[in-house]
Length: 414
Image 1 (cartoon, one colour):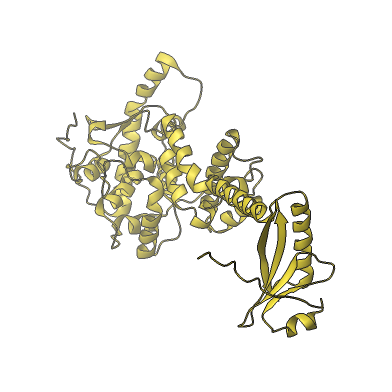
Image 2 (cartoon, helix red, strand yellow; image 1 turned 135 degrees about the vertical axis):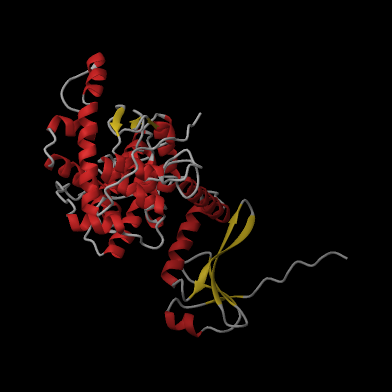
């Protein structure tokens, strides 16, 4: 028995007015004068849907346009007019819509594949590390502080407003400067790869770098030296004391290895020293005493909580906050400790050129063999100056006058 063709739904004429459209309730399809192909389909439960009926290549097709009243008559009529033009040109309107949707989905997929800041930044820093840049560790620390809302932005869509809002999310001027420097270099590299146009970080306002003059008083030094805040390891506190005793950069102190110490002196390797120049530093009895009480089960004198790499200087911010809060001290940074030591050494009558040698500041135009000779010609002067400062610091913080004369044995690292 042959299958019977479905009975076509009845079609009625209907006025175009909103009143008529709202009132119609009889199930069926309603057409409109002057709008060929446009139908309003009314179902038994009362829902109403706009349809467009066309014939392409002898085949009748019905396309759903949308629901009434969300889609008004005027909008439905406009869509139907576009469909009539397409069907008149032999274009299947349903296929055309499907192709348009497919194109839009493909475009959206391509858009989602465009790299975000979070996608590109680690790759950029990996390139910096491969090229030997020494600031990568600090940059990674800064990158970890960037909010997820900014990191999720596509590189090509980051605006100057986005950059401004990012900087405003940080309170400390130094943090703003570090973040701006990082995103500026990352966006610059993405521009060189054709991922963005103009760099939106160029021209962004950054807090001016004021010349700091903070030094700690005798009372502050004594309070800091005796501070033992909960949650801070003894070795980390000793790293701060070591910085005061030696006037070296905190990053160099944290990178101190047992193998860097010999004959009562510390040789800071060129790849650790900020200025890239090997630095020979005689150690005072106070500095040696600090070193002597550190555990020797790690290559680093001031061992991190985990891992083999030195602690990051930037990670001490939270430690200093705990120390300041515990001791009731005003704000200071690790660089302020170095400045305090340098200022006090100068106050003891040490010559400027000897102080410069202690601080490992680049000055003059000495190079070659002369530079090597110059590095050592102040060894005695540096030793005397640091011994003098060690004794003065010992007096300030109230330590016993009898210090261990020296460290008799240091761990040797092969």
